Amino acid sequence: MVVQTPSRLYSIEEYLLQEEAAEYRSEYRDGEIVPMTGASINHNQIIVNLIIALGMALREQNYHVYTSDLRLWLPRHREYTYPDILIIKDQPVFQEGRTDTVLNPTIIFEILSKSTSSRDRGDKFTYYRSIPEFQEYILIDQYQTHVEQFSKTAEGKWLFSESDDEDGYLTLASVNIAIPHRQIYQRVTLENQPE
Image (cartoon, rainbow, N blue to C red; front, side, top):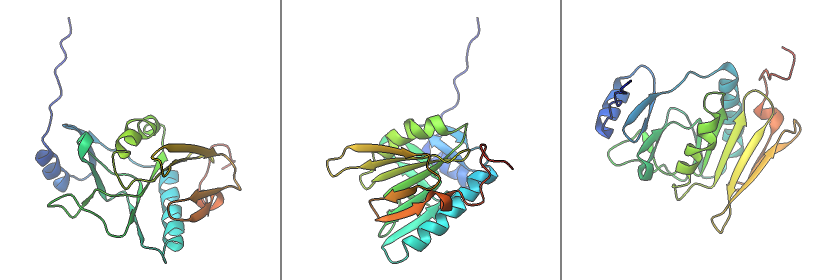
């Protein structure tokens, strides 16, 4: 008979202390510390493309774009995570006593990888929906042109849309901008394209 030893659970304070000294980032999932995987060149290029496009499109609006170095706290689910891109309206609301952990994103982007796509589509989206300010969730495939979008209606329902159209646009209703798919995937080598 094999006896499984339960993994150690960490307090929030232990996690935050470890994270401050760590050479790599980890997520916190209700007591469990989970190291984050490294990102591919496609993942990084898509983030760069989006940061440039979003920064230009939102420069006259009261929205701020942040990358995955900014931690998000989801108190209802006792989870710390690092979304790939956050857009926050007005000013960030920080977790009490912190200046590196926010609570109030309006839009969250995740770049899908083979190792994270099911979690990004599942638990993470469930947890993100506990944020009152949260309006749109964008999932970008890094292997082929494919954009998934979840948008919150005025009634609090979530609508899903997706596109594989290379000439399509990602329209963010909550901030009233559109970004061409070609701009999102600029300089990205997709699996269905020759190198």
